[in-house]
Length: 57
Image 1 (tube, one colour):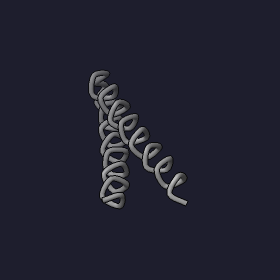
Image 2 (spheres, helix red, strand yellow):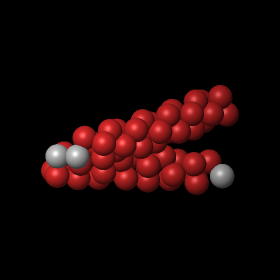
Image 3 (cartoon, helix red, strand yellow):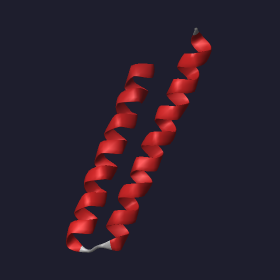
Image 4 (tube, helix red, strand yellow):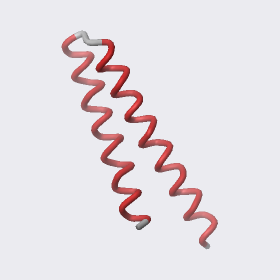
């Protein structure tokens, strides 16, 4: 389960980075903002998983 969450976090971060870059390329501020939001969700999920791992040991 934890591996799935970590993978999902990485996917969200990558998807956000691609969306942000595409938004900048075409000059679409909304897409750029959505990309940043996706990255933030991935970062939050990753931080949650790291915290859970820290308390397991």
